[in-house]
Amino acid sequence: MISHPRRHCVVALQALPPRIGQVRRIVSAQLRHWQLDPLIDRAALGVTELLSNVHRHAQPDKACRVEIELRLGRLTVSVHDNDPRLPVARDADPLETCGRGLALIAAVSESWGARPQPDSRGKVVWFSLRAAPAPAAPAHPVRIRPEPPAEPLADPLARPVVPVVPVAEPARVGALGPVPG
Picture 1 (cartoon, one colour):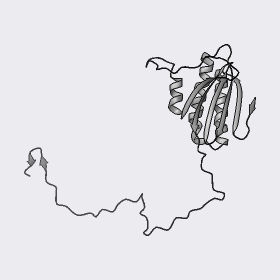
Picture 2 (cartoon, helix red, strand yellow):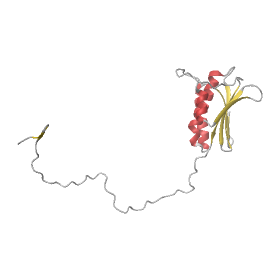
Picture 3 (tube, helix red, strand yellow):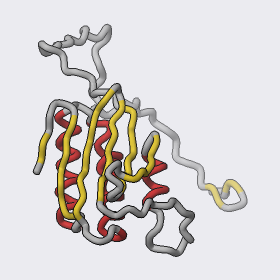
Picture 4 (cartoon, helix red, strand yellow):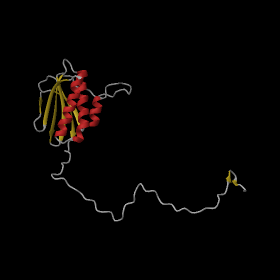
């Protein structure tokens, strides 16, 4: 189920790898539609991390809901799941292959957090980004005519003209100086 009123979008899914990619594309398309192109990479990365956490850690099921909302110049992306355990950010060992997701969320977002769902069933993990819409295109195309150059431009492919000056026979030079002829 996908609903997308003017500044709100909700996607319900099972957090399985193929669905995570689909949701990433949906979030990207929605942000493009809202003219928030500068936020696409960070929002797509963040939602991927949150959904990967649901896939990896949520119990008893992988059912979740992704919600993106634009309100008062702030984009909030939240993932609601049925597992009541709140995530804990930790410092991952440099050789570990996982455990950096929440640190990544913190690095790419303005703020993030987690809270129990109001119905005391599950939790919501969210992050927010400051949103500034992409500049609007002008209503009519603007043509700028360059002024003619003050001097003709040189042909960049032309070879420079070097005058030929006759030179006497070159002196022979050895390693220690001139060599007598």
